[in-house]
Length: 383
Image (cartoon, one colour):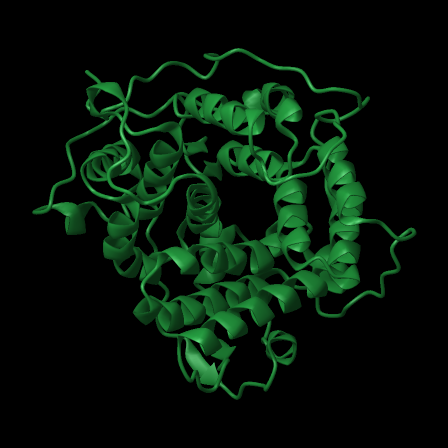
């Protein structure tokens, strides 16, 4: 019996779509924009299709599709969404079975248990059907923030994409629900992101402070690599024993927001010369803090400084786990506009390339676009 509060199907549910033009990857379409009009409807269709699928496959690999389709819609590529999703569908699994409801009395014991993903998602669906989404986020963000590092930081990244769409398109006028108390697709997406985060909640402890640096870029350069960098993300995370302190002080919410923007910019730029250390995993040094940055406007100011510190720890830890010992000079093959580089990312099709390019476009300067070009070169195209 399904107790999640949303009708579930199988990964094949939904109608595929087509993109206009293009010959490879997910196809391309011409146009820019912020995902309004018909693009919004396409995003809702894609999210409904994806909510029949689980947050992971094979018990550990993240379902990136909700984040990627949100990025496509945000950049006005609605016509490519269903085509891209069709190509990605072999990486999806059916929604997991629930075990028992998460309640106000037992949520602490369920935190960090990946077997409870369906239970957590159902919990947040109920919460979002009853309360304004900003209130739910403000309650749970400080509870989940210490465990930002679980699931290779993908849960917070998924939440960041969901919040961006809600901030752009759904005023916080109260609980958002459809018939029978089910949340709208975008609120349901926030429930899936928060539920995945709660299920994969994984704090880090015992990290010794090291001397920091004045700038985020210098602090990332000062991150010591882990010894014996072998194994997956959880194994390597356990080997992170010391990180530089950055920033040394924060004077208030506005300063925290500015420092977070600086960190996202520095990590994105750094990928161009360090991405060869691990083309996939090092994108998270930028996309994880950018997810936090996207969420700040929906959070109370009191949460901005702790959010900055958690984002720094995530970015620095990823750097410690995967960055190469030495940088490699990189010269992009020409210059590109933001629209051109996103078209190249879409044609490439890889989910990490799309999401990293989305972050690079948030910055928009030439070094960020060059870093996106490097990600396109290093990544394995979606077949």
